[in-house]
Amino acid sequence: MGMDRSQPRVVAFVVARLSSSRLPGKQLLPIGPKPLIAWTVEELKRCRTLGRIVLATTADPADQKLEELSRELGIGCFRYTGDVNEVTSRLRAAAEQEGASVCVLISGDCPLIDAEMIDAAVAALLQAPEADYVAWRPALLDSALEGVSVARLRAWRLADDLADRPELKEHQFPLLYRRLDLFHSVSCTVPESLCFPRHRWSVDTVADLEFFRTLYERLEAAGLPFHLRAAVAYVKQHPELLQINAHVRQRKVEDRPRRVGFVIDSGGEYGYGHLSRCRELAWQLVERLGWVAEFVVDDVPSGDLLIEAGFRVRKGTVGRPVRGEGKRVEEAPELLRDFDLLVVDISDRRGLPPGWRKRLPDLAVVVVEQFTPWVRESDLVIAPNVLGKGAERLADWPGRLLEGPEYMILRREVRRAVQEPQPEREFDLFGYFHSAERAQALEKWASTARRKSRVCTGWTPTFLDLLRASRAFVSGFGVSFYEAAALGTVPICWPDSDEHREDALRFYRWWGVDPLMIEKPEDLISLWDLVERIRREGLPRIEDGTPRIVEAMAELVTGRRSH
Image (cartoon, rainbow, N blue to C red; front, side, top):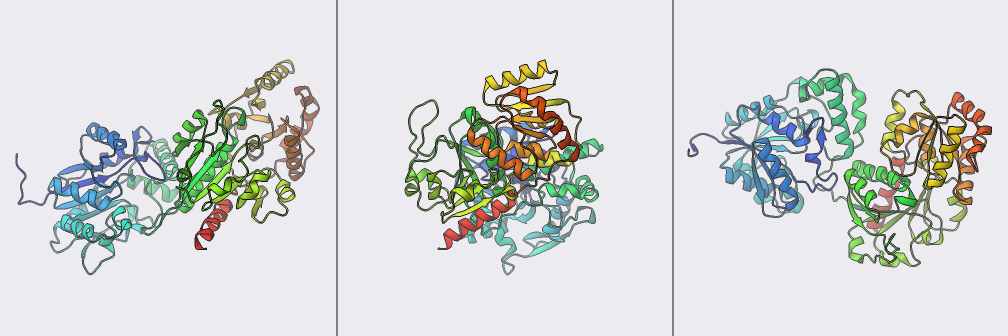
């Protein structure tokens, strides 16, 4: 059947691509039983005014998955062959191909929209032939209707023609709302049930995704639908949920996000402490500043964990030997010059070669918890974990040092667990080692002493659960000591080296307790009374200092760029 040109054709365009800089592939990430974007499409299908729903994506091979999903969801798909960053041109081309006269733009990262309000906006525009677009009253910043706009095709065309700078094409027709001399609006009133000022209802970061996942779980437990009106009502009654992503910064049209590269040693003999703290730091840089973070790592399982956490990963070591290959990976300078900032969190057993900074003259460089000579070529050192050592070893260094527990990087899983009701302590001991020999020795002793224990020698997704369920934590000194203390689990050091022993002693002095040190599992017998006393009296409060680090990094990068 041919298209009826006498009637306005109303088409909804869901704009999405999987190469988001802050959270790649976010549209396919699950919220409850469905991918994020499926919730969006499901609500659009409830609209009475729409003639068609089209997913507007790019011809990039990575977006093939979106085309496949559109078929599963029973909607159309338009794949733009031009520049992937030209959002206005992509949407215009899709609307022209569809013969749309009224265009409903839906951001593919907004899982909760409202069909009733979309129908009301379309009706308002159709009743005002002179209007180019719909203006929500109150404005979007004061409502929960994020990621929804309605305009005529003629307005899209003109706004795209006038977009003479990249940032004006990369966003969703910002000129519509800036050039009031050219574009005229008709108002559509947002009801009180959808008014919710100054909160994010879209997914750009891991914190945003966590907000929606938590909201879904809460609504389901309360027997309520995962729908925008139910969600707004629930959050008004439970405002504590807003803290999950209240710190996330909304990017502005003119923003040029900085790019941050993290070089870490992780997996195997290096454990996962470097990975866990840098993952949290990277998340908060993305969330608080709107920057882009990538990782450089030479361990495949670690790379997989980082990809799962929403980061792009490059294989490499920045000029150091790659494990198992016995050769150096000489990254091309231009590979690292993609970044504005380099964060280096590596083992002291394979530091950077002397003169390494000459290859990276334009980068700001931050080093995490290292004090060997190569560190003096960096700009900023963060030392939250090893107390006092930085001030001693970098006394005459001209860079900036952030040292002490106030700069502790406490990952969000721990912060969340601290706020939850504490579980019964199922185990006496939880041991975490890189050495199978030590793990076996602790297990053997615990069995003989009739102490209930759990031991692991590598990454385990249940690490935090085991830490919370144990009275004491036995390991070489590291970041996990602070996590254990935050969770009310007493950390005991079985040092891997003299340096570990020294670092642990500094920690216990700061903590204000006698050193909890062992040289063999049998030493635990004499420590157990002290462990129980510490648990009864309570442990010092440990807070997340990552926001302070993020602020210092922002000052470092903007300061360098201003010179």
